[in-house]
Image (tube, rainbow, N blue to C red):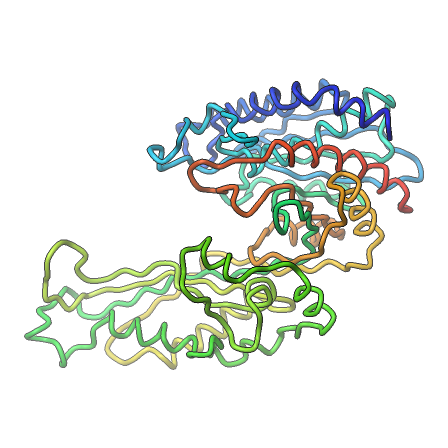
Length: 456
């Protein structure tokens, strides 16, 4: 690998400047006023891959374009699909950015820009590692297929349809995704598990209009009172969700997995200081990492009803509502959870109000087998790039595309995160360590070699 490593070292500055070009494109997929910028980012990605020698397509969709690119097949070697996204979150609030979100700025070894870590910077590492192989060796040790979308931040509608229609052409042995984080600075990680999600909105209707709480209080059921009664009934003081049957399909944590996580250098006091809280909470009997990675949860995400203006107004509101979510773990099914929830709300809701439950979206949990040869190959590659063996972790969030890949293509994903938890993803002053950017490129370059040693 000396010749590959030498090429990467010689081109560090150029790689950074090319990344800055991509970061300067304001590809905000949620904002229609940025539609042309999203299109420009797709064209930039497609042109870059084509210039490297990939057979490249810019694929129009009903939403934002997809970019698909592939290298030549390598007989006897695996085919690897690399997924990423070129769209970004809105940069608001703008006044909290130290420098403009689409004018990449380097400070203290970090590049600051929207999309720096989510996901342009991490995605781009795989472009540059492929370039090194193609320029130095005139070929890759595996076949690479890139599938890059522009709707990840708004639901990935187009790619879901594309996957169903093009599963045969996307056939591969393993998928590589870099859109997550290391465990800690200098401690790389491979994420092998994700929680699923079931997200709902509950709306309650009481009287046909707002009422005077003095005149009608005590005689008419207050929808806000009913709402709080229902929400309170969904979870007890020990963090256990009270929906009948909710835990029936939950896979218990294995003793060796709990021991592996307990050995990680996790500092609860530092964690609390970083978050600005005085205490941690959650289901009794589990550690903080266990609760956030591998136990189901219930959280109220928003609540509304009644008077919200300045001063006081003694109103009994006609309507109230809340948005809430459950994070799910193997083998929970968001559709089954929705059915159980409906039955339980019917029991909890007091007479005098009508209720409507809206199923917003759901995603299935995901766990990959750690014994896979692809995981072992990735571990060796990351050790070569970062100088230490990665730890194996789960993630509390949900990445629906991962379960979609498994359903449509029948293969697992390697979630190789080069970012950090304090990279301000989705927040002002998003950043990405340039050293981690280059370590990611080096790890990726080793990854193609290590994966080529796995039988296809």
